Image (cartoon, rainbow over all chains, first blue to last red; front, side):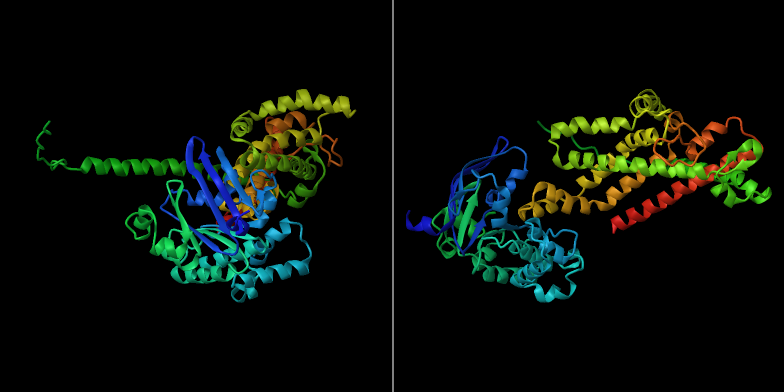
Length: 255
Length: 304
């Protein structure tokens, strides 16, 4: 094992993905490092969200998806094992739009642990509080844990979504354009949160917003037409890109 | 190729639009008339039933209390008590709900969440066709298959019974329940499912903890509609109920629900007897009005 493989939390080799006859990813290879923020950028339809969703097998839900290649998380090939539930407890996800369930804030955060069979009230209380604190939303919601989560603002909802994800104590959190539906102030709060979270979690974030990628990520992968064009330390990608296409994109010449 | 020269002319050409406006107002009046027709029918029917049905209690001194709670219905002896029929209607409806609701709900969940598209494409039209079968055929089916089955295998003296009614009504309410519940389950945003699955919940867990609760109001509406179908059904029930005038105490008792009482006797009834049948209609109508009211409340709450 060489140096880079030792620190790789997720190691993707030669991944191709087809929606029926249409190929969406072309032999993508990428090593994602532990406790770092990795940003995936690129124009709409470039495959970055599709790629993100292969990491917790959310693409399995779509009919007619075919995948070749390997994705190894903690030395385990996730497409060879059939335990999707175990994978998803380890790899959490935050979606583009806040998708809290129509239940109370408490029940939303406790949903995942309950699905894993945790029934003890004390334990659940502890998990809920820790998770909400971890997502920097505890102070805002602690007095209304029992009221509907859908009464919160969009930015608050998204942070409760993050709390819901960390309630599972995952290793990895996938974020699919988590701030694209939020106002600038809420976006800032989520970005600050991401900076906090990376101390404990490996984060992979898809974003349309290049300033965001530059602000929050350690490494950045640039996708174009289902391929990775460039993958490097974020600073290099933005200030010193090796590929002309990357430069055109990050300087705003297209996309 | 050159394009033909564009002729400059005024499309309206200065014609008067009087005829158009007349046609507009004429057609809108026609539509209004059609719309009023159903309101008018409703008022006429309700008014007529209430007028005739309330007559014996207002003008002829019959007690409404005795009508509702009296257990004897002997028109020849001037005894009009519909209590056995009310109980029969309620039992038959509740019984059919106990069988029909779980089967209908599980079918709806299966069709909308679990079944592969190909399978759903076969089952879904089959369920909907069930709604197209004339109710008398349900009765004939019940009489020819279920009634003899009960006689032969459960050893009943008479297979026409509460149980037979419950079974047939349960089948009859299936299409209503399945279609309405399926629609409301399909309307649950996909993001809820994704959110739940991404948290490591199983598919069945996701269905029962997130999807079904989110479709709660639609599912309740489905149940109430199915209930309305069961309580108002007449033709099928007439053939298999047995029509005995007793307060049912077991599933194997022969029953006479409110609807069949009207249908059976209206043909020859006259005078007070006929008016009492209209009064039976009022009771039935009230049941259904209450149901509709509940339904409207539920849908209003779902919309919020």
